Image (cartoon, rainbow over all chains, first blue to last red):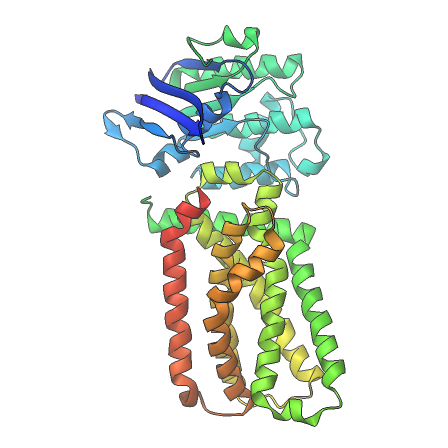
Length: 204
Length: 229
């Protein structure tokens, strides 16, 4: 059982305070939605929770069965999908898959990758270079790779962006499937996406 | 950040393989390195072809060779990080691999690129300058150690400048003081090699190059997490 805890988290950029005193505890099996108006700090908070941006004050601790994880352990157990982070254009779908699988210490073969590509509506496109994908297909590939890594923590920043209705439906359905074994953070402003969350953190 | 050697090796290898694949398809860094080397070599050889003093002056021969290598490195080696930042792939890499892994992966990639550069440039330089090779073994020692040092220094500086706005100018400006000791020692080693001297004559320079590389690479590994995060 993974437990994620923040204690009096705060972030400032110069004199401008983004948020403060944010304390939160969540376990595997939860979907936490982060919402708020534009500029309220959803993406900033996501980055702090992921471990790639330091907080101005407070702490983030992740424990598994009572043992605190190191930053490296946290990262290898985390997957992220956001429209702002890109995969490698010069590589094919399979090669992107293989690269992140190797970094996440997961075994990889094209058959396994193809199953996930098929799930996200990209069957038969694994050999194509990412440069030939549309923006929606790239977003689907990010989901396929992230879900295939079987992460303990999954951060989805604006998960519906660049996706058509069928893409969104696949993402929500797959998220429900992995929810039991995963803690999901979901940064969004879409009311239809908020309804999938167990808890909503509203930033102002 | 604590990870096992085996995991570190496998993940660094994944980064090198990815970078080589991307480089093989785009050929951006390799083309930039080799074109710069070729242009400067040709310019130097045309300018000095009538001068018999150049090919006879081993210090000048060695200095010109390392100037070509240094500035060729400056044109291509920063791409390892700049490309990741420009393409917005760096954040996912940050999330998926620790700083130590990324440093070793990028260092190995730069080392491979600079090894190709050294292997192509040296014979071409000797041919175009009509220089006597002298002690070829010592040349190899100088170029190999110098390339390791250049790669180690260029990797950490490239990671620093990748997050700034004026990367090109900053990369050379920051690299110069870091890499100057390498250049001086490497120039002395290759000058001795052009003169046909035995290795023992420049033993202290070789040890100096090994020690400086060791210190620079170790410091870079220790500091890289702060630069990369």
